[in-house]
Length: 584
Image 1 (cartoon, rainbow, N blue to C red):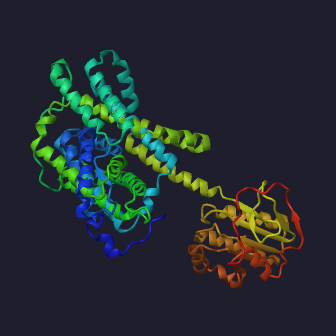
Image 2: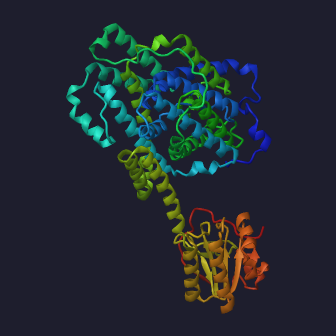
Image 3: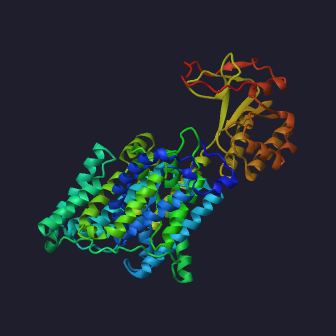
C-alpha cells in the first residue's frame, strides 16, 4: 500500500501517535514499556560504547529519541534511540575531526545530531519520503553486512581482552590475529557467554530481555570472582546527572565539514525509519505516514544534539518488541524512557561493575543479527548480478573509510537503477487469438500478428536514459517491417521527459513523412498525459490518434482486427493471464 498525502495542518500537529489513546490501554503500554526498557538499557550502553562515548550517553540518546518521536511522529509503536546501524558510520567520520572521548568529540557529535535532525525535519516537512528508496534491497543487505563486520572488528578486542588496534579494518583484523595468544580467558568467557545467552533467549522469545539477564549475570560473576584484579575492564563510575540542553559550540568550518556526513546519516535513518514504520504500521488498513515519522526521528536527533549526545534512529527490533508485548501507543516508549531516566538518576552505581566484555557480547549479537543470510542466499539464486552488488557494497564499507563506503553504496544503488532503466528495449505486441487482448510476444504464449500493422510497447519510464534506444528500436522496426499502421501501447510509460519527448516527436514526424499512421493506445499515466501536452507532442500527433485500447485504435483507424492474421507460434498458452486491453 502506498503512502497517501495528508492534510497539511494535521501533518504538523503534535502527539499524533497518541490520538485516540485511552486509559484502559495503560496496563498494556506499561508492560510493553517495562520490557522495552529491559531490552534497551544494555543495548543503549553498548551502542554508546561502540561510538566512543560514555555508556550513559546512550541513555540520553534513548530519552531524546523516545520523547522527540512521541511528540512529532505518527507511528504508535516505533522505538527511536541509539542505533548500531548508524553509529559505526558517524564514529568513523567523527574520528577524523577529534579524538574519541574528548569534549571536542562530544561537541562535534552533538552538532552532527542537530544537522541530521534538521535534515530529517526538512525531509518530512517537504514530503521527501522517496529519498528512503535510494538504497535498493541488495545494496541495503550489503551495507548491513559491511556494518556488521565493522561492529565485530571493533568489539573483538574487548571480548578477547586485547588492546584495540588502530588503522583500517583489514589492518586491525591482521593485528588481532597476531595477538590471539594473549587472549584473556575471563573476558573471552564473559563476552561469548553473553552472546550465547542473548542468542538463546532470542530464540525462545524476543520478549525475553536476554541482554539484561546476561549483563546482570556477568556483573555478579565479575564481583564474586574478583575479576577486576585479573585484568577484566569494567565500565566504572557513571554520572548520575542529566545534562542541561545547549547548542554545541564548534567552529563554523567544522559545521561545514559535518554536512556530507550528516546527509549520509540522514539517508540511512530515512531508509530504516521507512522500513520500520511500514513493517509495523499503526493501522494495517491505512497507509503509513512515512514523512511524518521522518519528523519524529528528526525531532529525536535535534533533542539528542541539544542534550549533548549523538544522532538517533528507528529500531526495527525494539519496535517489534513493543508490538509483540502488546504495546498500544507511544506511552510504551515514554514509560521505557522514564525507567531509563530513573536508572540514570538513582541507579547509576549499579552499573559501575558491568564488564566491558559483556557490552561487547551484546554488540556481537547485534552484528550477527543484522547480517541477512536468508536474503543473501535468495538473491544469489535469483540474480547473480545483484548478488555482486551485495559483495561490492559490503567490501566497500569494510575496505574504505566507512563514510566513503556508505556513499559508494548509495552510488552503486543509483547506478544499478539507472542501468536497469537503460536496458529497456522496444517490445513487439501480439494479439491473443480470438480476443481483443494484445500482449508482449512470448515463446510460451500463442499470438498472432496482423499484416502491415505493428503494435509495440516500451516497458519503462521514457527518459533521457533510454530515449536514444527507444528511437533507434522504432526506426529499425520501421525499416524492417514497413507497416502502414504503428500503434504504441503506452501503459508502462509512466513518465516522459523532454529528451524522450523530442525522440518521440522525431519518430512521429518520420512516420508522417513516410505515410505511416502513428497511434498511441493506453496512455494511462497522468504524468505521461501531461508530458504530451507540455512538450507539444500533439503538434505532430492528432489528438484523435490516442485511444483507450489497441483494439479501439485498429477499429477507429478502419483496420479490421481479424484481417491478415498469422499465428506466430503454437505453444500452449502461458498460465499467467494476459492483461485485458479492450475498451473500458
